[in-house]
Amino acid sequence: MNTLAARLFATLTVCMAAGGIVGTIAGAVYGLVRDEFANAPRPAGKLLLGALILAGVGWAVVLFVVGVLFRYGVFAIALPSLVTALLTAIATVFLVDLRGLSTVGALVGLLVGLLIGALLCELCEWVSRRTVSIR
Image (cartoon, rainbow, N blue to C red; front, side, top):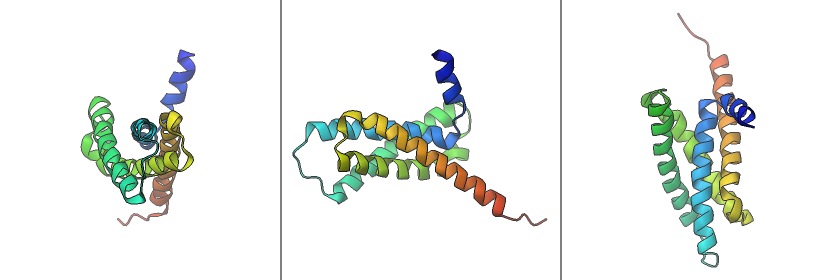
């Protein structure tokens, strides 16, 4: 089992790891808040504000874990991980709120983060293939 998990996580790109970290944080925290305040009204503006706060917290964690601990460099991953964090947190919070998935919010966030990270990584590769370098 240990080798299976190691193989799965060894294939993650930096964008997928960032999305997974942010999605797990956003899904777990918002799932707990939603579970505690189940009957409270949640307008879209407050959901967006909460998602942006969770994206900021998740982005700081990603910068520390991936940028400092894994030595990718904070400045090298700052902008791509910010975009990934914003998209992942917003999608996770709205999906957990829409479907009422507060009990499995962390798992939903992880899956959403991995998917968004993979899509952004493919988009980045596609853009880099399409650009022409002038020498």
